[in-house]
Length: 167
Image 1 (cartoon, rainbow, N blue to C red):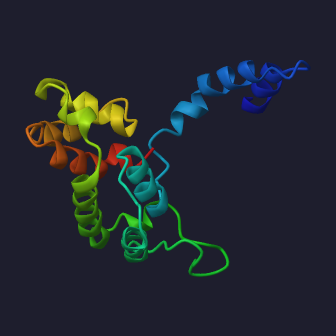
Image 2: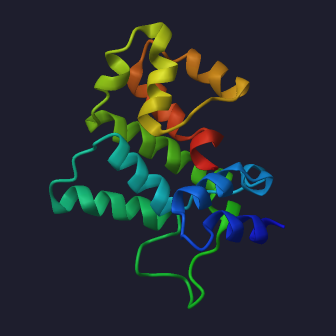
Image 3: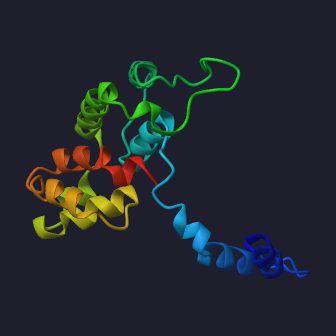
């Protein structure tokens, strides 16, 4: 079983390297890929950090809070004691416009030098590197390739791909 494999890998010597190697090698770990939808806070703050968007004043912070409120997940204000709904609740078509407009706005002040400094033929890989995405689906790659001449749009579109929204 999975638990037995993990316990044996950890062993009496408390081998963390063995535990993690085993855990990441298990079929159950790979099977979970693509099943975790990132929540609005993780999406927005992850994008702000990856793109090094400056949040240097209260006005910028309030804009981010407004986006999170619109997406239904304002920190410290859950809808009830059980917190926010997880999964695909925030991936509605209603939120799609907010995500796109936010992604475009973030790229206006972001550090896109990793992408803009790459040759056009390498920009798809550069944006993947910037956002921590190892590979693009054929569908996402086709859409993103059409935007390689415009780094800001390329990054904005990458922020709304399933590869960035679902881990």
